[in-house]
Length: 181
Image 1 (spheres, rainbow, N blue to C red):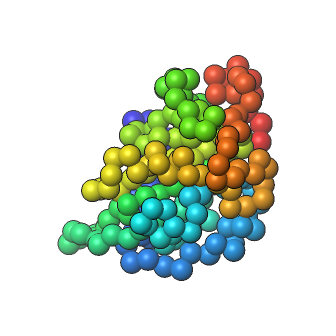
Image 2 (tube, helix red, strand yellow):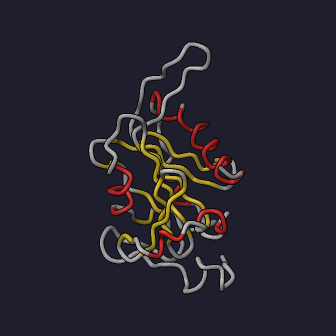
């Protein structure tokens, strides 16, 4: 595992406790976020309510946490909520995230899907979305969440709950064309 992958996983681990007890997510702040397009699965995805939005994640990530969990362990109790969607600008660590060429053969609603660790990563024009499922959750949960993506803010391209998700420009994922925000 490279340092960038480790950094992303550390960010997920740091957020794990955010979904433990549930909090009041600041949906209005996410709607006003204008740094890059934010894609989410709505206020509720399947049986899981949105319990937390972290707009200040380390490494320029915005994370949407769905569901709650019960902390375990005696030294530093922690848990992993059922679903976390980690959104970042498309160009963030793209060389590491797009390195495995599986995205050439997989897509959801027209957008290529790669993998980092065991998490699927959807590449849209302007943003990438990593879907992490928690321990004990359905193995297909992350994939279903990516299918349900839509915009929460008005930063282009705006994605609706149905229809295509705009893919990055040709050549960007391959590295033959520069990634530009």
